[in-house]
Length: 144
Image (tube, rainbow, N blue to C red; front, side, top):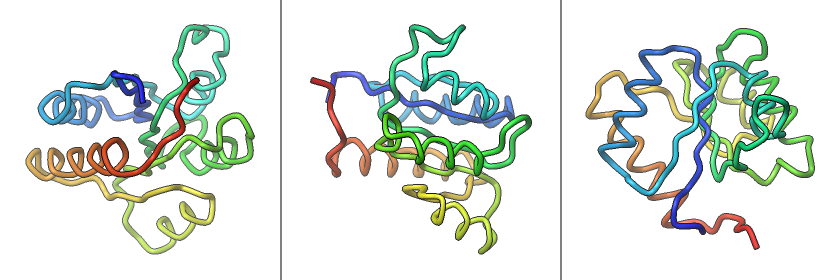
């Protein structure tokens, strides 16, 4: 793993983006959080499409489900069907918590499903758990 992890946050709610950015800043300094606001931008980011030519391949994607243009499910389908991208872990981080949302996410090969916490302390705890699990516990593909 490089000394700095690249995390792509796909989130359309500016308040949620701010809260998540603050949590990462409190919990973990060895990251670069990249933010896009919809699924189309997410796919352009990971594919280095025009406007995103210098974007790094993320080590982890945090994906909201309910977004304009291309929702999280559509993004999951495209990511997990692309041989060059399907290895990137995707953590669904969304307000949805119903059985159908969870099942559909896993059927589309999400690596984790987390319902967004309501308090800042709970969010800090979730971010800490995500960081510890994905960057300290499991092995992730490393660039050569």
